[in-house]
Image 1 (cartoon, rainbow, N blue to C red):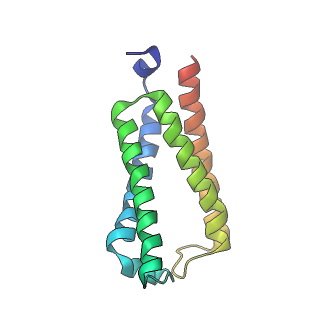
Image 2: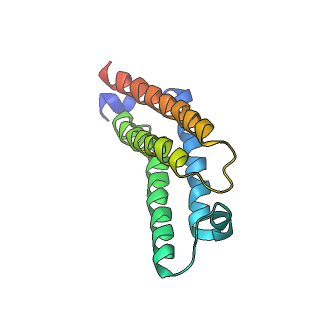
Image 3: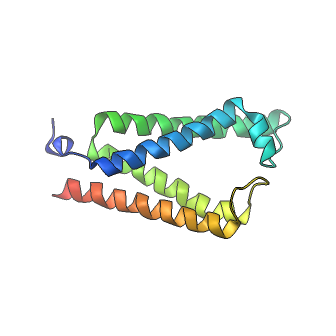
Length: 137
């Protein structure tokens, strides 16, 4: 076992990752099984081309869930960095996309949505830095 894999991921980083997994699992459920929820957001889920896109989004999100659960189990800091980077990129894109193209039943205004994502991305960057420092020490 390498020296880096023996280093302990901080509990708060694991908690953040578990919360992100739960959010992504809810999205996966919506993509695969709850098309009414998607329809309520204003997304049209009719016809093969739209279902293709919806199921591809579900599959890609499911892969992120599997990778996230894997790093939660292994606690390997280097692998954790990859998953945290994926989360930062995903949430960073949502930070721009969600306010520009809000859904019909959005619980908050586009401005509030932007700031919520800023906080989420900041926490993810903080977690990335914490794990990166763990590897470098």
